Length: 258
Image 1 (tube, helix red, strand yellow):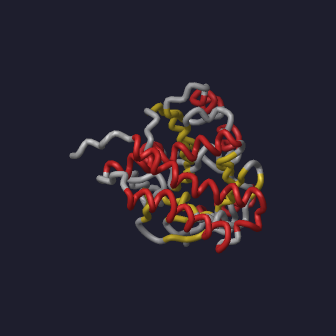
Image 2 (tube, rainbow, N blue to C red):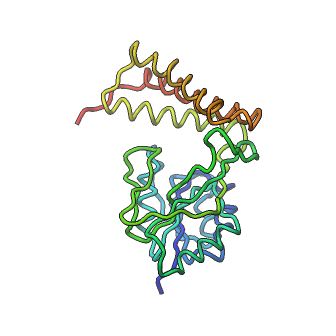
Image 3 (spheres, one colour):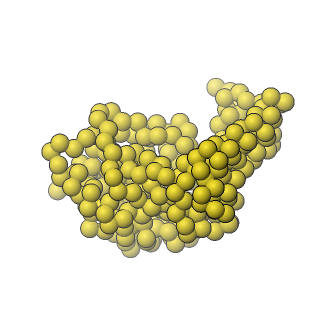
């Protein structure tokens, strides 16, 4: 029998995070698909022990390619995509159950997301509600897989849920710095492939103008300072990635032109 709801997750070395993620959908999902992206820490085995169907793929820099692959392997009438460091709350599970059982449900839904830095939820600085398109009828939404920070495209009606899910991207300083480097490297290769070359104008943009604009927007205009020290670190992370992008662009070899 076709499951009512499938959950899709991609993971690279996420054996520590995956159990909490999958536990949060237990009793809601009729099927869980995990795409193991060249993990070396037993992620695939952990996923199987937790009852997921596991597929192995290369660990591509554009994560959305494997997100699309995982979704293609689901069978449910509805699909919910989650990252390993995300968790559903009990109120959200109940809301999703009501929505997918309704005859008047939309084709896809945006869900509010609470972002946690070092274990604390940030309410300001643009970090909430951080709406994410994650729940959709099968065949009604997809990741275009053109860029890392893209939104799911929806074919049909779009609704919004009220209850948030939780995101724990930066449990410690190591993850904070490692992800900043990853995002910078991806963006540099994306820019290089489109013909961008480091120079004076780009240096001003990535080393001064954009970092300053982003910091002022997130920390002051969007009231990030109300989150205290962690609000400052969150705003600093958003600006640091711009500086690191320019540094990565300078060391990235020229892209092959099609």
